[in-house]
Image (cartoon, rainbow, N blue to C red; front, side, top):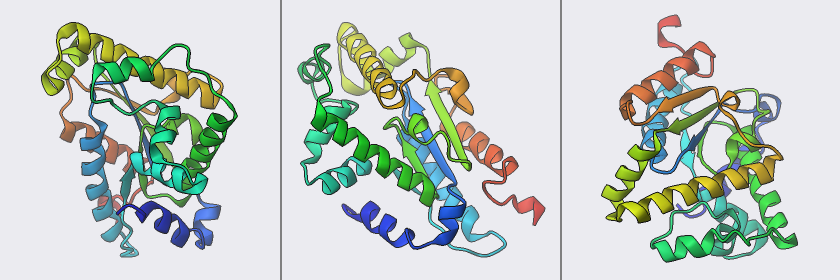
Length: 239
């Protein structure tokens, strides 16, 4: 499992079709407290089923990735994944002390950091070009925005709702949970701005869901229907 992304990209690099027709790829951005993992897992299973039952009967497996991008970049740079994460600063930390340390406002990007960011950018672009991937976070929406067959999604919810959810799942006090949510959001926004040169606004996304009012299955169904209409997957009714 550790090297699946590296092996998959290596095997797929020989496919001329992907070089001419990059994608399809789904990129999910989320505010802290909104769970993209559950959405990605369900989508990967459903979309794999669609590819298998398509007209060509092509058994193409959709995969979802997040931390694997960091591991792939670490391999290419011959670095420890932990050092890559220190640059991205987007992983949830196990304690509030680690959060406050990682998200120091004095953090600057040096030459080594830029090399890390460039490598991760290249990994994400290769994934998007190969296609049949769901990318969670990692500023993928900003990095691969020019890929033609893509769907950029954002999960958001009211701040108070997200604070309450973090309190429940992490057993934090309200003040600690609020600090955690705001810091995670802030650092994700800063990184996106750093790698893309601009802030991402709502008009940069194809679909935006209010995670506090939408069940996972509703979100997944909506995404699948949009992909059908965009011809990113085969619509069974049209066969």
